[in-house]
Image 1 (cartoon, helix red, strand yellow):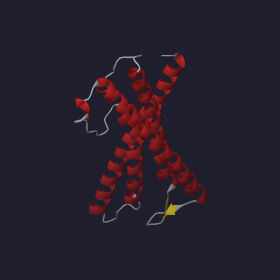
Image 2: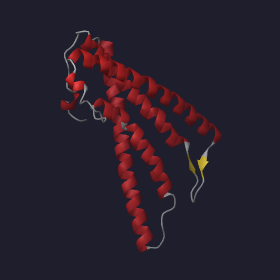
Image 3: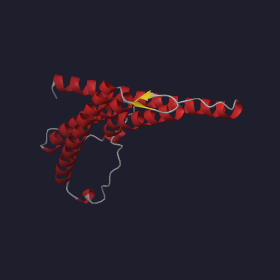
Image 4: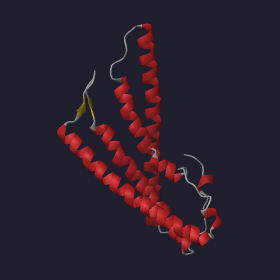
Length: 179
């Protein structure tokens, strides 16, 4: 593996891990906001305005920002009952095709999600409720998360192609340690 590829993979992994931690902190923030709102509502009869709206937007980020990390750890749901019956070479070929299709689809989602987030920011789009909250930050998590997934899909596809043509041996990603 060339030094440039190793550096690109290292940067990609760092980006994905940072996004995972942003999602993790968002979960903690939702929990703290919910407890504070519950306490304020029941003890003081005064709910905290905007908690539901902010929690909704943070959930979008939690989901999308974790896509790349789940792919890196091979944690996405998959059904492999039939493919396990196939030869390793054929299985690898199928995996290259599915990774490539997934990359194409999520690249389009990232591209269009970026366009939607950009328009939302330019228009100053808000969700009006008890507290007006801008929509663009939540919309921005879609292209960021899908972009991180695409980075990992490029790495995984490259690894699978290298395995398919015999340049490398299979690496079990499930045995890699969590960061």
